[in-house]
Image: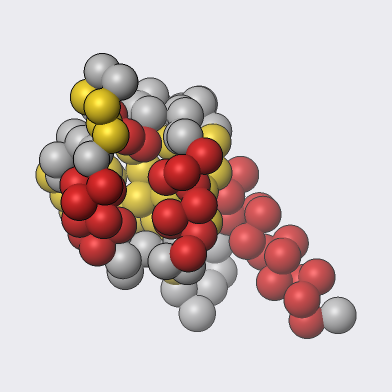
Length: 118
């Protein structure tokens, strides 16, 4: 089974965006063998600005990422993390190089698959 991962990055190199402030997500597909492949960049309207939170904008971002099983961000608020979880999307906070973050997520997914199958 392959996975789609959405990465919050402004420069395509580093996971450097807070989930609620990200204007784009870089989408990667992870194969069963753990290899990853860039698919696309998705532009979104951030659900947070300053101290304001927009529930409709959050719902739209979640719909925009509904084909992804994971999001990788530098930060995320509790409410957004819960909303993603309710939609079946797992959030990872890994403020690092995208390459490193993807490898950490892949290792976690492989480990959790092994744990479930035992």
